[in-house]
Amino acid sequence: MAKTTKIIVGAIVAVVIIGGIWYGAGRKPAPVETEKEPIKIGAILPFTGKLGYYGDYYSHGLNLAIEEINNAGGINGKKIEIIYEDNQGDTSQSITAYQKLSQTDGVKIYITTLSGATLALAPLVENNHDILFNLNSAAPTISKAGDYTFRNNIFPLSEIKALSTFINQKDYNKIALLMFNNDAGVEYKDLFSEEYISNGGEIVGSELYEQGATDFRTQLTKIKAKNVDAIIMFAYANEGGLIIKQAKEIGVTAPFFSFYTSEDSKLIEVGGSATEGLIYTHCFNESAAASFKEILQKKHGTTAGLFYSATAYDTLKILAKTLNNCDEKDTVCVKADLYNVKEYPGTSGITTINADGDTEKSVFLKTIKNGQFVPLEN
Image 1: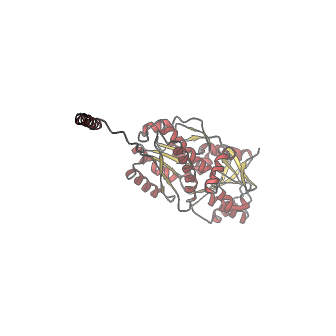
Image 2: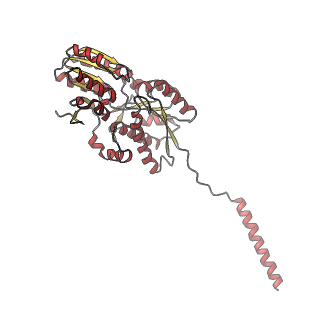
Image 3: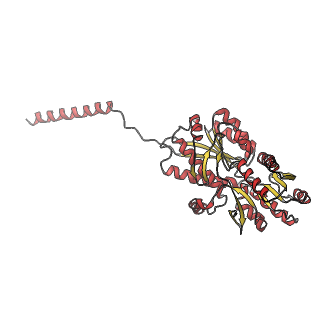
């Protein structure tokens, strides 16, 4: 009887084992959760050279946006990864960086700055149907650079009209222009001259300087001899501070007016008290970005270049919004969705992308008062 029981038990065990083997062999293994490939975005920015500080400004904003997006689960389960490339503020380096990112890293979406770099990259991205988003460059021709090129900045023609109208109303009839000799500077010079003259003003002097220059006394001496009512300056912060400081040193008394590039602590740092009273155009309301400013200060120990950091932050957030609707490789979809961005409540201002890929923002006048950038009181 015991022997019979053992045989029965053994048979049952054998059946269970065989059945388990059959079940295991016929069953598909449970899927292993693997992390999705990240969405790669190429950032071609200056980190070295005379404009290297702009790369820091922009990366501060971009990294903050990446952290927020990825901590919230990314884009449809994919994290964003930015691959930074230093273009040293140079056009040819920008092209080299683009080719590396495109061919080696398979990037289809790019962020850059500087007019020359953008205008050089625009035909390449147009041909490859890549997305190029420019940060804060001024050359008006970027508006017509291609369907795949976008720009997040104050609209050039809007600020030219605003500043020209203000100066005309102040009866500054004889003015001189001092602009950097690059795509943005030359185009601003031509468009401002056209606008100002059409309103009855007179341009009595026009001087260009090479980017990176440190001595502007020759151009300023020529302008001083014209006995002008006002000087219109378009310069990066370091150079702008030097221009205003050297103008005061040689006895130039005409007031200075400028554009959005003047709102940078480096301008005051370099130009000191000579920068007091500078009037310029802008679209950025710092008080509306108070929480963003506080986060930057806590994370990086500085809020220098706040507007530029905010623009970069907004740009990545806008791209993320679009990438929720489009696969990053489907750039035709990404392009079409970007053109539909209207009244986006950005840190750098309410943002609408128009038919030329430009952002439209409200333009107003600001000034430097007691070492601070503040709205100009009427």
